[in-house]
Amino acid sequence: MAAIALDDITGVILAGGRGSRMGGVDKGLQNHLGLPLAMHALLRLQPQVGHLMINANRNLGAYEAMGVPVWPDAIADYPGPLAGFLAGLERCETPYLVTVPCDTPNFPTDLVARLADALVAEDAEIAMAATVEEGPDGRQIQVQPVFCLMRATLMESLVAFTHGGQRKIDRWTGQHRCATVVFDDAGAFFNANTPDELQRLQPR
View 1: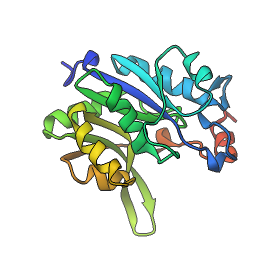
View 2: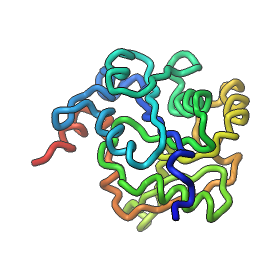
View 3: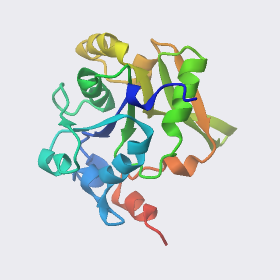
View 4: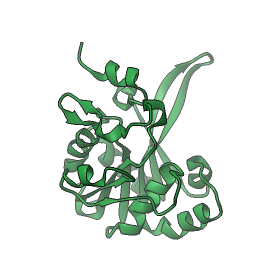
C-alpha cells in the first residue's frame, strides 16, 4: 500500500533557471538522446505522480508543447528553485507537491514513493533526497534539496519567506520537519549544468 496515493501528489519540473553555466541557453530544452532534457524528466516523473506541471520562465510555447500546464515564477529576476517551489504550490490542487529539476534525466524511478514513505513514517512536512558522496573526510551525506516532496500547506510559509527576500532552500526547509532519504546510486542524480556535463550524460 502506497504511503500517499498518486492522485494526491502533483509533480513540478523545475525549468525556470537562467542556464548561466550552460551559456545562458534554456537548459530544459537542450537535446538529450533526441528529446529535450525537461521531457526526459517529465516522462520519468509521470508514472510516479497523479498530476504534472512545468515551471519555466521563457520559451513557454516549447514547454506547453510537452502537454502539461506551464507556470512561470511568481517572483521576478530568476530568484532560484524556491520560486519554482512557490509557483508549484500556488497552482497545486493536491495535498502534496514534489519537485524535480529539468537537468537530471536519470533520477530514480522510485523517487516519489520513497520520499512519500519517509514523509509519512517520520511525520515530516518535507522529504528530500540525499546521496552518499566520497569526500576528503570519508563518506558524507549530500542532500539533494531540489528533489523535494512537501505538504501543500507550506505555501504560506514559503510566501512569507520569499517575500522577506530570502532565497536559500536550506534556510527555508530548516524551518520545517524534514525527512532525508538516502539513495545508493549517486549517479542517478548527475545533472547537466554545463555543456560538458550534458556531453557526459550521452552514452559512450
